[in-house]
Length: 322
Image 1: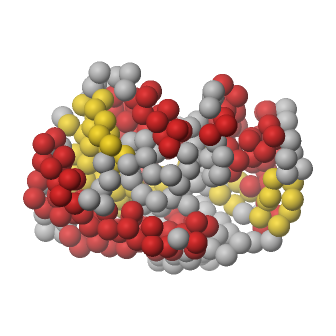
Image 2 (image 1 turned 45 degrees about the vertical axis):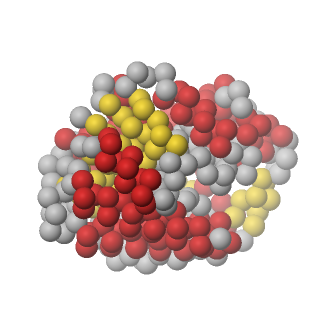
Image 3 (image 1 turned 180 degrees about the horizontal axis):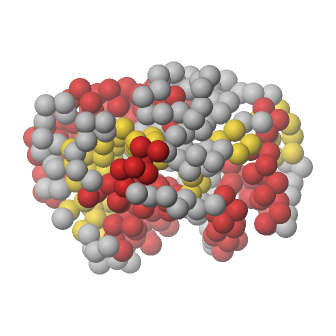
């Protein structure tokens, strides 16, 4: 079985590729090493994947349709996990065009390719941010989508495009909405890495909404295992799945846990809410657990300890800047 993972040099894509590689599947990783954050971090991830004999990497910009079509036609994948996208909520206000190109236009290209090649499975990683701010929690997959930033809007648009395009096709489409993923090799713009970096530099750390944002933190290796387990799940009419631990925490409490386990802290600068950020993310994972019988999520304490251990041992900390 041939598996293509787009965004294989990214945070979740890297961990998903490792999960398939350990199970002896042939994995074809695709990435363009864009410079949203240091490509060195992405190359470090790919170099780890290249240690597996069943990993094949292709440097490719999926915005280039003809090149992408040639690569995918040559591979003839059985399944495509589409994780490549432009991340980052705040950056989407500064440069919305790059989100349109890297999220919506790329997804359109992959839809065209799939209509030609008809892979058995196409799995898309959306985002919990498509829900926006709600009145009722936890969020179920059929909750109304109320995105409040451009990034989330592009994810919602991609979901709609995929549902409409594959409606009458034999392709097994599944859409996943991960909630606040964290862990080793996380992006440098994410809470855990930015905070640990500031502590090491003995500099200040800005905490927005005075740390009262609530997030449903989900450990990255759990996400990778869940995405892998879905590979053997048959086609479903209800094909959207939350990926979340359903155990929300305040950001300020997470910072206190990092302080406790890392024995280091930095001065917090309390700041007001920022435009486009959700107040609460808290998902219902009952449909997920019913479908794949995945019940044991990594505790936040264990996940934080593993993340700190990775950070302390990572040799290229100087590239974890954002």
